[in-house]
Image 1: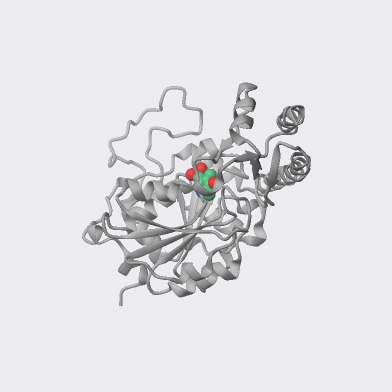
Image 2 (image 1 turned 60 degrees about the vertical axis):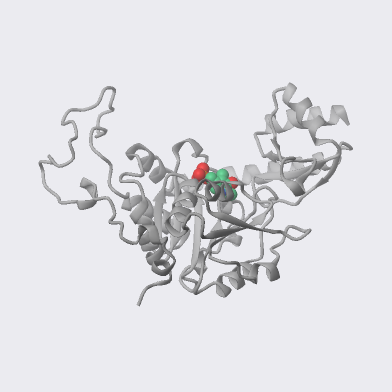
Length: 354
Ligand SMILES: *Cc1c(COP(=O)(O)O)cnc(C)c1O
C-alpha cells in the first residue's frame, strides 16, 4: 500500500528517478576516478581540507548530531541549505502547478506564499484570530487539492507561540490528506513550544528548523527538515545532488557540539533579557500604540505613525522591518533584538521623538 507521502507526491515527478550523483551511487576505495574532480588541491585550500572533491551526498554526521540535539530519530532528519530550501523542496515535491494548493495562517512568513506563487500553486490564507491564535474552525474546513498546511510557530512576524493542541488537532484532521508543516525557525527561544516529540505519533507532521537564527549562522545556510522517512524519501528525489558544502557541514557540526550548544544557550539568555528589557522601555514611548508579547528574538510594535518612525530611524541608519504592506499590519514595524548598544541607540532616538 502507498504511504500518505507517496499518494501526495506531485504526479509530474512520479516517474522521476533521483539524479545518480557519484557520491549517491557511492562505493569505497582508495582511487576515486568517478566524479571528474581535480586530483590536486585548490588554491588557498587549508591543510586537512579536500575542496577539490564533491561533498557527501547528504552529510550523515550533521543530520545525526542535529537529531540528537532535537531529540529525534536520525532517520527523520534531512539537512538542507536553510529552512527556505526546505519550504521550496516541500512545495515542489508535493504540489502540482495550476492544481494544488497550500494553506497559510496570516500574517506570517511570506516565503510560503512566494514560493507557491512562483510555481503556480494557489495559497489559501486563513487569518489568525485577533490575538494571533490559530483559527481552528476555519483550518478544519477542507479546500480543494490542499496538500500542505503551513504553521509558523513561533509565528513570524507576530512573535507568539501557537497552541500545540490546536496544531495537533489540525494534523489529525488531515492525517490522510495533507502534510502539516510547522516552521520552528525560532524554536530555540522557546523550546517548550516545539512539536518535535510528536513526529512519531503524527506521520503527516513535518518540522522545519534552522541554524540561521539562535545559532547565529545565517550566512552558512543550514536548515533541517524533520519528518517521517516516507516524506523525506520523496524530498530526496528533487534535492540538489550535493546540497551541503563541506565547510558549511563542518561549521554546523561545531555549532552542534557540546561547547557549541552551551554557547548558543548563553547567547539565548542574553537575547531574551535584552528583549524583555527593551520591550518594556519601548512600550512606554508615546509614539508607540501597542507592543505584542514575544517568545522569539524579535517583537512586533504598532506605532501611531509607523512610516514616520521608520523614515526617521532610517535617516539615522537604523533599519527596522516595515510590515505596512501586510493587510492587517498597518502601522506595524518588526524589531529584531540587537546588541545592547544597538538597542540603546534605537531607544534613545524613539524617546527623543516621544
Ligand atoms: C528566517 C526564517 C526562515 C529562513 O531560515 P533559513 O534557514 O535562513 O533559510 C524560515 N522560516 C522562518 C519563519 C524564518 O523567520
